[in-house]
Every structure is written in C-alpha cells, then in structure tokens.
Amino acid sequence: MLRFGCFQPFLDLRYGISTMQDGDMNIATGNPKRDSLGTQNRKKFFVKEGITGAIFLPRFVHGNTVRVVNVQNRNEIVEADAATTREQDIYLTVTVGDCFPVYCYDPETGTIGLAHAGWKGIIRGVLTNTIQTMAKQFFSRPENIRIGIGPGICKRHYTILLEHFGYFRGYEHFIEKRREQYFADLEGMIGLQARSAGARLIESSGQCAYCLNTTYFSHRRERRQIPRVMLAYIMLRGNGTKSEEI
Ligand SMILES: [Zn+2]
Image (cartoon, rainbow, N blue to C red; front, side, top):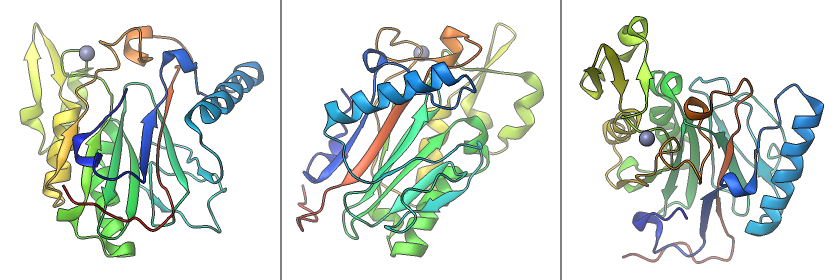
C-alpha cells in the first residue's frame, strides 16, 4: 500500500503502484507472448484499481523529456520520462522496477505530474524539468508542488560502476564507498533535486523494491534478461473539489 501524508487531504487525487501480485506490467519486451501477458496484467490491474478512461503511457528513454498531456494527445505513445497535466480524469502512468516513480501534485492549480527517475534521468534533471514544466505550462509555484517519492532501490542495494562516478557531479555526497564498491542513494538525489527546484513538501515512501522481495519486482535483485516491472499512476478526479488544506 502506497500512501503519502502530503497527499492525504486531497480526496480527488488518486495514485498508486502495482505489486508483484498484479504481475509483470512490461509490454515492451520484444516477445509477443510476454507483451500480451503484460497487456492482460495491466487490464486486470486497471479493473482492480477502478481505472477507466484516458491513460497516458510514455515510452522511456531514460532522459529528461516531460510530456504535457491534454485531451487531444492523451492516447499518443511518445518518448518521454515524465508527464504533467491539468486535465482531470487523465491517468499519467510510468513503469518502474528499481527506478523511482515520483508523484507530483499542486493543489493550488490542480496540476499533477509523474516522473520515472533512474540514475540517468536523475543526472539529466528529469524532476527539475517536471517541476519547471508544471510551473511554465500551468503556473504552478514550485513551493506549492507536493512530491511523493515512490518505491525504488535503496542505497544499501544500489551499486554504481566506478567509471560512472563522474556523471554524478553535484551528488557526490550521495555516493558511499564500501568494500571497494560504490553505493548510490538515488532517493536522496531525487529529494535534493526536488528541493533545489523549489518544492518544499517532499515525502518518501521509504519502500525499497529490492528489499521488499515479496511485494515488488527489482531488476537488480532478479537479474532477468527482460526485467519485470510495476506500473505507477496518478490522476486527479473531476468534480470541482480542488483542495482541502490540512
Ligand atoms: Zn534495499
């Protein structure tokens, strides 16, 4: 169960993530049989969560592109690692399996965002771009944007290659050397990026996909050729009730 206290007052905000019990959500494996299993699993998950209507599914490139979703383009599949919308009843979704889903909500403007943040996206500023896009497109003030960092791989389990160390400029203090290995705190980096972009209410689920081995898939733990993934979503339900302050 994924619950963020900073989203709790907003009854029209819906968000969540599938678990291992819901099955693998990967539909881009290149294997038609596997892809159809992923499609079936998604359908079942949508029914279970009461998800109907417009769903925006980006294709990841581990970059920093943020798609602005609206009624016209909501069914397009484009290359992006994050999305934002002010339309109600549109589900933004991303798949993860060690990478973090980062849920964003500005109750003042009714804007939602969802980013897929792995190390490549983080160093390319995917969350900075998400917050800035919400500000530019929908006039969200960064300090009003609430951030929920979903399940991803924890710093005890996430090793990086020595030759990648140089990419983490500005985040060096989130990297620790233990027994000749380098461990990176991606969640810490996401938090710093959100704060640097102006967000003030930032909360983490504290859930590690690797540690929680009966709840989530984790690519680093499973080491499968084709990773199994979870589906994360966020949506703001229409009906007017915009915000209800704590
Ligand atoms: Zn862990």
